[in-house]
Every structure is written in structure tokens, then in C-alpha cells.
Length: 233
Image (cartoon, rainbow, N blue to C red; front, top):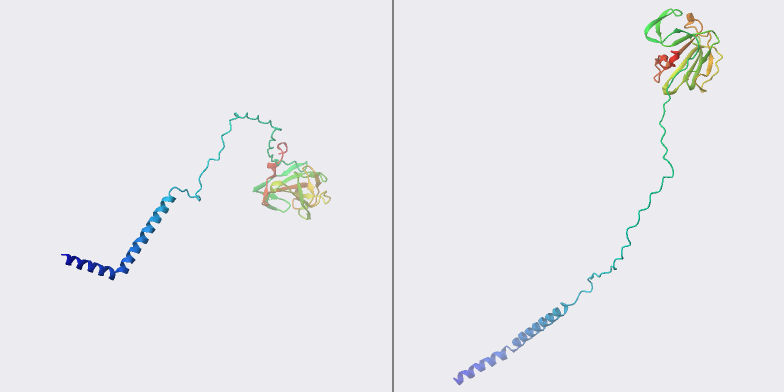
């Protein structure tokens, strides 16, 4: 029995001697691992109660509220310094003609019925208003405007053309050569522009008279009676 025990001790000693370096290495590894574990545990415990300085901690910086001073009295509205000016309505001037001359009506506007012209010996429409009067009778501008032209021809004698608002144009034919206006001149309603004369030949059978025409913005001849004052129609 004792011999067997000695044999075992001899074998253990031989094992230790043979594996001494390996055993020392294992012991060192275990020691190092233990030290690392202890160090980590200690460091973790020490940082649990420390507040990170990089984190902003809100602080109450508000001061105590001031005591209310009571509602402020509303200010009285200031009185207006002036009354608003009302815009004046735009008034459109009505176009009303005065008579271009004093005389007897010897021809009225007719654009749908043929009228016999004894001078030319032909039938045609009469798109004008004729007023017979003595030679020298004054001829007046029927409405404010600007003289467009003053011309002369064998058929129509001396003729004055005046432009008015809204595109209207008035034409005065069979005047004497001594007209008192010229092209480009501004004229007013009732201004004398010339006199009746025997200067044209296309309506000579009617004697001395004014041949008055009215044209619209398109140059079409229209009845001037619609623009005359009521008492002169």
C-alpha cells in the first residue's frame, strides 16, 4: 500500500516537472484575467454616480413674476382732421348741334329713297341737309372741334371739314372763298366759319344754299337731324 502511494507521488512529481511551464502560463493567464475583471468592475462602480459634465442641466433662470399693475385704460380715438373728399362723377358731355345757318330747308337726309337732281339730270340719294339762304348768310360750326381741311372745287365750291368728338365729322359745302378758318384751327360751337355763296354747280337748281353733311367714325354719312337741338328740328 505504501509502495503504491509512493509510485503515485512519483508520477505526480514527474507530471509537475514535465508540465511546469504550462501550468505557470495557465496560472498567469488566470491572474491577469482576474485583475482585468476587478479593475473594470471598480471603474464601472465609480462612474455610476458621476454626472456627465457635457450634458446641459436646465436651470431655472426665470425671475419671480412682477405684480400686475392693472389693466391699462384704452386711449380715446382721435377725431378725424377732415372730411373725405367725394369723387366727383364723370359727366359725359352730350353732343347737341346748333343750326349751321338760318334759312329754308330745301333738302333732307335720304339714303334709302332716290331724289331727282335737276342740275345733274339724275336720280340719286341725298345724304345731306340743305338750307337755302341769301348769298352772304353766315355759316356756323355746329359743335366744338378742329378744322381738318379747307378745299375748293367746281362741283362743291369752297368746302370746310371739321372733326368733332366721338369720331364725328361735319362738312360745309357751297361756301364763298372768304372763309374765316384754316386747317388745324380749333373752333367752338357757334363760331362763324364762312358764308353761303353760289360757288358750286352740283345743286345749282336750288339756288344759294348750304349743303351740310355729317359723317361717323367710319366715314359713313348719317342723318344730322338726330344731333340738332329740339327746337331746331
